[in-house]
Length: 235
Image 1 (cartoon, rainbow, N blue to C red):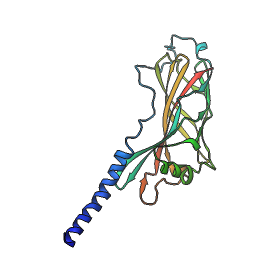
Image 2 (image 1 turned 135 degrees about the vertical axis):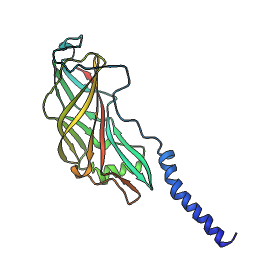
Image 3 (image 1 turned 90 degrees about the vertical axis):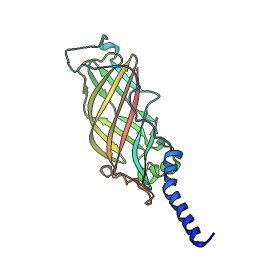
Image 4 (image 1 turned 180 degrees about the vertical axis):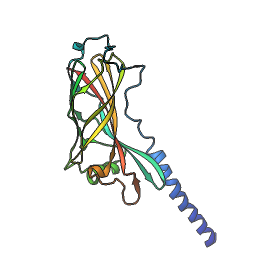
């Protein structure tokens, strides 16, 4: 085989590695990103927005009291990564969440909720090392916190398996920086359990978080999403 042919073959191999390598990595090795955290799928109604409509079929005494974070709860991040033109959704999560809410009639006092950032992990060790070190510096800022600004007023006490959506204002602390945010949450009660989900966009610079882009190989947008699914049990 002459030199010219070797050069053509070599160029073809390089092109295949540059184009096909990242595609194989993001679509085969990394695989599909986990689904967004949301209330578990089931048939449910919609909570009434009319304060005069109790719509519950249950007394306030059945829900009044303290509800604590239970097993199965998760919180984490979702960020778009680009590797040589191939887009992949990077997702990291933890189940280490603490907090509680207290119900009294249609009034909800909640939080603070604390997430152990040192336990957040994804499907890639190299990403986790960057997250724990350069990006979130969890040795210095080991937790993220959300504090609700004021009691939440519900229109009524929702029935079992009825989804309620409400905007919750509060203070979100990430990387040692606190910002006022409003999170739209969805909640559903089922007897002695309540499930709450939601998400909030996070612009990294607002919290003095370094952009996750790394060494010109992996690039990201200047923002991501913090998402959560929290289970509560009564008492």
